Image (cartoon, rainbow, N blue to C red; front, side):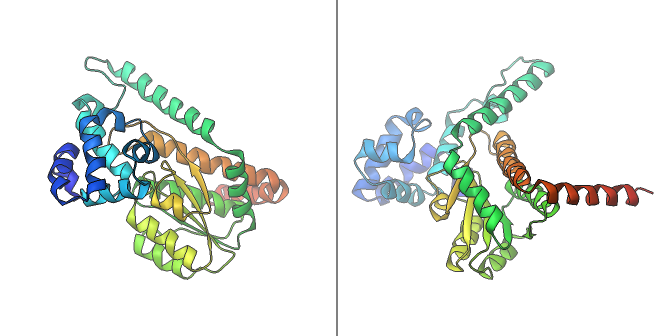
Length: 283
């Protein structure tokens, strides 16, 4: 269990102050005096405000007991949130079940629209080129990102793309180390700081393979390792950012649809064969 799961973000920052360097302490003090500002600030914004490098901001986060900048923001958001926000950001005390349902759907729709708005054409085209030209694809993620990865794996198999998606994180790292130039890793992590996923991406790069990152944090370790980044957007306080997973699924589904558009005849043939197998297995 990470230390910030036992203590609040503000408590951890104050406790870490004596052991921080002068520049790191400047960052911690800035956050402690205006914590609400951090929720809307990028790591670069904080670095500029404190007149330090973004590396210093990241180092302060880790020395204070957080996995990275996004981890600090999520922990701080939980500190500042009401108990109801920890269930869902838009749900209010006294909401009836149908109102709750509508708010959950509205929040998911907003996250999907925000994600669509930040997709860069060059990034999406580059991601499609990687998927289209790679010899084989390794998909990796853990937890709910792993569920997203398994869905993408199934789509790739039906499209005729040579694909591998072990669910065990150690196996993911082993398979990444055994890749060759011309292979591709699709690494999925909302925070971009999941240690095993970053390690997998780093191993793939050392092996000469390309890395496509699907993450909510362009400033994360995973994003910096990747050749191409597809960003999902979600504004959630709770530990499990479920709308973000919907956005990741939509991003990868869009990639598969774009791939199908380029290989229509082959994809339709494969889809017909797959459908026939389902019919035959039903009897």
